[in-house]
Amino acid sequence: MDDLYRDYILEHYRRPHNFGILETPTASYEGSNPRCGDPITMMLAISDAVVREPAFTRRGCAISQASASLLTDEIKGKTVEEVEKITPDDLLDLIGVEISPARLKCALLSLDTVAHALAEEAVESQGDKSST
Amino acid sequence: MTDSAAPARPAPTRLDARRLRADFPILGTTNRFGKPLVYLDSAATSLKPQAVIDAVNAYNAEYSSNIHRGIYEIAERATSAYEGARASVARLINAPEAAEVVFVKNATEAINLVANTWGRRNIGRGDSIVLTEMEHHANLVPWQLLVQEKDGDLEFVPITDDGRLRLEVYEALLHLRPKLVAFTHVSNMLGTINPVRELTEMAHKAGALVLIDGAQAVPHLPVDVQAIGADFYVFSGHKMLAPTGSGALWARRELLEAMPPFMAGGDMIREVHLRRSEWNEIPWKFEAGTPDISAQIGLGAAAEYLMALGMDSIQVHEHEMASYAMETLRREIPSIEIYGPAAELRGGVVAFNLPGIHPHDVAQILDRSGICVRAGHHCTMPLHERFDLAATARASFNVYTLPEEIDALAAGLREVVRIFER
Image 1 (cartoon, rainbow over the protein chains, first blue to last red):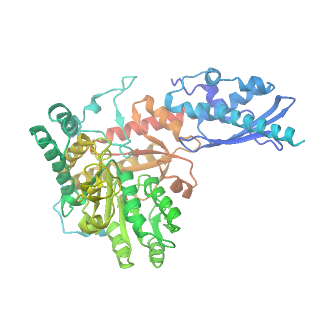
Image 2: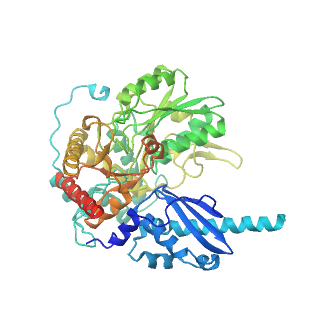
Image 3: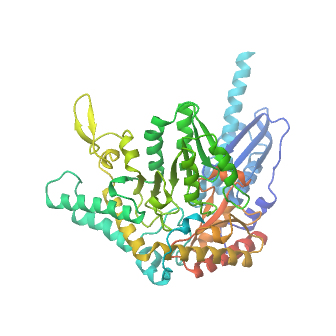
């Protein structure tokens, strides 16, 4: 039996949670896996510093897809501060299967893209404040 | 094909792949689950035979010393082994003289060398270079940098849906009077063997020089740079049973002599004064600093090993493996998509996809069974875009590949399908 491709991983791959497009995200970022070029777009609807609605679209392998599905479930309803504290190890625990070094990029791309989306949102809301 | 129209050769003897596997110590190893190594990624890098390992070890253990300098026994031995390797490589590709073989660390470095020396001197504003859609990034990006700097243009020969160059478009592009045409001899993704002699002749008639990327050809089929008529021919050692860090650029003497140096430093000079220097003779003019001596000695040993097996025999064997793979995979996994031309036109490379399953997942599951395949874009992103593919899985073969290994691949792929369908 294959440790990596457990049923729940394949289930998240076949029917990913939070998969789709937000019409008006307050933060979004398009990342890509440098190893394979597979793209992911993370979209977040944030209000009162809480991630109300996360969504993503991507093309990719089972690991990266399951990772994005599990991560978006995890951050839904969390404060931005809480989301920013999620570490790669936290995400790997969430995925719950052993990821070989060659596949770490696949597994962690979703978190990296969320971090970029939040960073851009922070810069933009800073800009909003200074311009008003 | 034009290239096989050369003088008739006697029918090649059959390669005894089963016996020669004993020459490759790594084939005796097993993975973490105790499965024997099924190495189907030779297009990325090849395995190394004992003769190559011994040649590298002998340098390090018995005569480690710098070349072209020391006046003592082991230094003379090192120089003679290094230059002997150059002579072996020259023989392998039928170069007119060893001095036309410049040692570099890989095909990538060879192409960068030509782009930065010949290219910078000869490509100017509005000049065009013709490439193809099937180039490895190594034969694309250096030319992008060059034309960006010089305000020149790149043109691309498109390919057919079954992965062959469209010669009628190539002919039309040659009317633009390009200064250089650069193409791969064998595609590292599609496996297509290009008609290099015909392509070269056509380019020469249009007044262009020709650079051929032979990284996937020199290890797998007879290459005769004089019969092809090329101007520059480049290849990596590590794909032809030699160590990483070895490789060669072959170019005609008059081109090499007219080209300025690439890297500057020791060994590439004849005389150095504080404000000016004179360059060494070719090929040393292009070999600044202490090279990877043991790797290039290993390259010489690899060239000898390949010549002893016979390049004709190797080509027949790998062609048989590719045919067997295409037939077996299509029969065992009917949903498989295989890219590239018919078996008759290809070397030992088979790229494929299983519908709905990412190639990374395919490779990961195969790894459990000790099967090594490549997954990704294989440094040919434009070619994958051409076929609207994000990535493919690729099996590639070499002298040591056996039909049983292809059977193991087929069984592994059936397991992948089973896991994803459960």
